[in-house]
Amino acid sequence: MAQTGTGARRFARLAERGVLALAGEDRVRFLQGLVSNDVTRVAPARAIFAAFLTPQGKYLHDFFIAALGEELLLDVEGPRREDLRRRLSVYRLRAKVTIADAGPSLAVSVAFGEGAPAALGLAPEPGAARAFAGGAAYVDPRLAAAGVRVIAPAEAAAEALDGLDFSPADAAAYDRHRLALALPDGSRDLAVEKAILLESNFEEMNGVDWAKGCYLGQELTARTKYRGLVKKRLVPVGIEGAPPPPGTPVMLDGREAGEMRSSREYLGLALLRLESLAEAAATGAPFTAGEARIRLRPAPWARP
Image 1: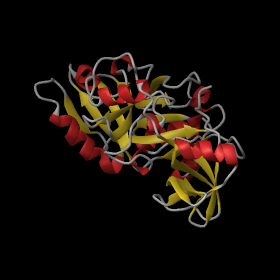
Image 2 (image 1 turned 135 degrees about the horizontal axis):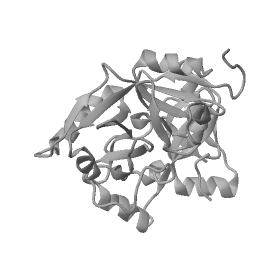
Image 3 (image 1 turned 180 degrees about the vertical axis):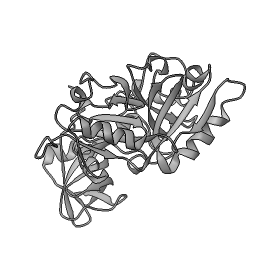
């Protein structure tokens, strides 16, 4: 019997996500030179979160990487998957790797709620992975509380999760869950060719490896960290009033402090200037966006 109530285990098909499959003997080496995290760590028991940047270190795509057999599976934004496939293909040259859209056979689902990793036989650790329902299941590498993502045939995943006492939910339920945890949703929250990883909390969300070799955009990413160049941060906010549309200016004491990103009901994310955050903390002045009052919320992934 399916659970109900707060903390109940649920699952949702994420129709706005897609899957790219990388095959060939050079698949790990190829991707390792392009993305922000260490692809050599990906294994049947480990998935990672990573970003693909411009040569100038600006955000283009983010995705999860899991292993299934002799392939690397990329859990990506569905509407933008062809753009990512095309951009990766530019760097393929003579590498023995193929990049294919696996969407016809594989779908992305997410299982969340109290005890979700344990119910799927996984340790509650970011990135813990295993084979599941003809595909791969892995604890969200950014934050274990986000749940378990599943890349598998849609019907097989739904049947397997139902058998483990997960109740079906819609994607909006998961969207509220990820906003409560202050997790961004790709280009909904990060401006393409403008955002940088550290203002978008990729370090706290395990999306950058500082010890790996060179990758596209590494120089600016490292310089941002070691020279303390971050001037804005993507932060979780609570909304009192109608949710402001993405891009709505956030104001503090009559001055623009940043702008809204994605939101749902009373939960949202906003990109705010650090100096404005410090001013609000010192003076207690409220943030506003349109007709709504905006208050800061703690971020579950924040490090002491």
